[in-house]
Length: 318
Ligand SMILES: [Zn+2]
Image (cartoon, rainbow, N blue to C red; front, side, top):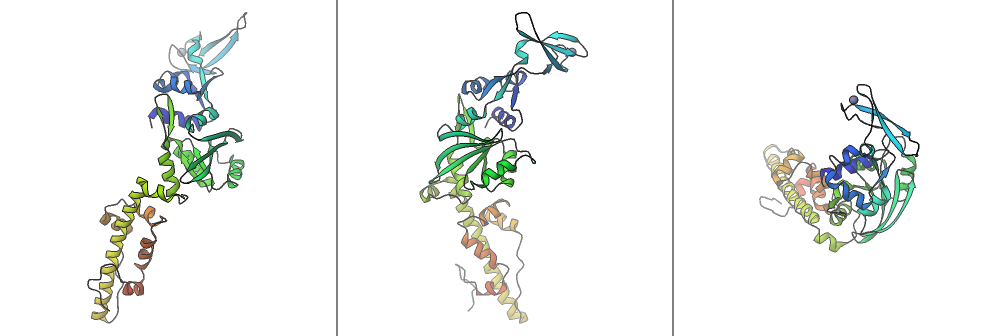
């Protein structure tokens, strides 16, 4: 993801999603021609404000038609007075949502329909992670203006919802029950076309427990990563159960009363397994982590610990 494309996606979250001449010929100049070529941005009404060509102050622009009907823009600067605005300085482009979606989802069965004006679109269908999925797109989340969109999405709980940015995706995620994916995580500009990282999208669908393609599951690198993490973490939890079991029997021998070994923090288990602390819940909640969840529940249950017959039985008493 280039910083420039990220900037365009951020702009897509704003109403109206407009790009001005300064940006087009400035930060965005490397990609702007390609965006125009894709039809992602289209010229729109000229800007009502621009920077003064003399002092750089942000100024109002007034348009006056001459006798032939041609419009000319005049910059009103409170420091420099009125100057005729160069035409190229006033140009503005608006992001064309339907065209942008068409370019992002070019490999998908597209039938774009605007469902809530300016905010929610039904994009089409794709066969991802072993099943046909409805694709929707939402932008410009505004806390008090999302009821209509949320209501529509509630009728499509299995639809995969895309939003331009992660910030936007996070808000839609909170407001709906849908799997929401940000385009800035999965779309990139390759030369003159946009491409969608379908592997990444399918990985997210599978991670969300919505997959239905076992062969995909085996081949997905993300799947293999998480399986390895679950295994490493399970191993550490089993080690703890064994220590806790030994501790319980030792204390019972010595004091006549078994003692529950204090369980370390989750982070400690992650450290031991060579994982990051945030891996814990992702592993724990994974659909393939039944064993891990079972063992984890046992760690605070003295009876279960004493009955624990782990994979390695060294030191076990009967
Ligand atoms: Zn000025």
